[in-house]
Image (cartoon, rainbow, N blue to C red):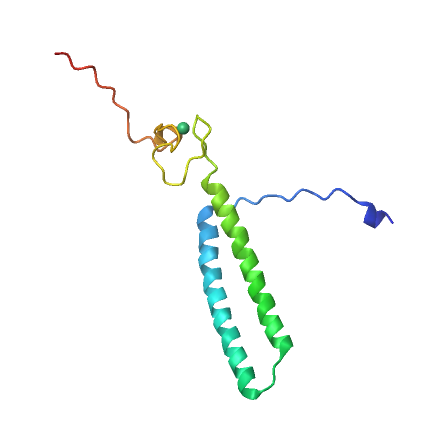
Length: 128
Ligand SMILES: [Zn+2]
């Protein structure tokens, strides 16, 4: 029974997928989902008209929809994870698009290499 004794699964290899391509896939999947929902509604009405409910047809459509929903949930989770990936020096997660840390107020641009177009200018104290 060596087949059933294997406890270790090979760890899933995380594929480097860009957030952009995930968002594109999500947009496409939402369209597919909406179309399938409409199809399902149309199917139900057609079956009602004919007075013959076909559970197999409905189940097939629902199964496809559940598959799409599952994939959408996976993408949503992946995208929200990537959104809080970066952390400030204080340990707080940095929200996507934020310019300052929401916890300590540090400028976020300084943490991002290559994005430091703005420079912090320290003014000498004004005398008088
Ligand atoms: Zn902070």
